[in-house]
Image 1 (cartoon, helix red, strand yellow):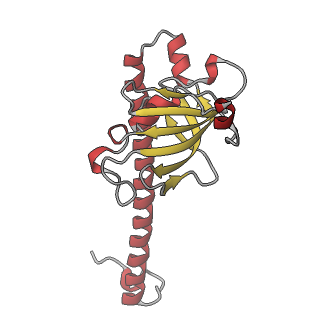
Image 2 (cartoon, one colour):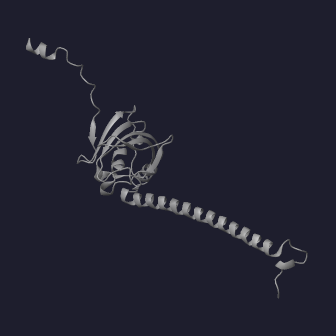
Image 3 (cartoon, helix red, strand yellow):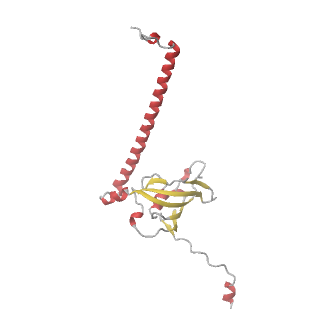
Length: 210
């Protein structure tokens, strides 16, 4: 009949698309899990205060041009500490360890009106292929178990990150100061040698006059 004619030669149905979750509630951050890890262990889902490791490839949605990716090792960040774009903060909490997903992040949840250098144009929607490799530090869960609220925990995470940054900066400054001091000492020695030639017994030309 007509029904048979209409379906004759039709292509086989496409595999179902992964479920897309609107995690921001306004279409700004869409998460489509492309590979779901087995099991349903709540501890395997990050919360604010946890440190996670992810691998990713980032592309500009409008052109498909790749602008960033992890190279051989995962990218690590503290969830809820403001270390990554807002879209990632929301999306990563919907993944379990081992999950792979496609994140579509609108400009206002990414780099906004400023964009990011030459790589990301202003207001650009971005698409990331990500995998949540592991939760390195269950700091958020430990705080939650101790009865610490999100409001109390986030400043602690930020303070810890700032302390690490300050310590790293202090180390860099100290190393720089040592290098400068060594340079100065060498310069003085050279100046002294060139001025007075080899030192003689008794102090020679370098001896201080009273």
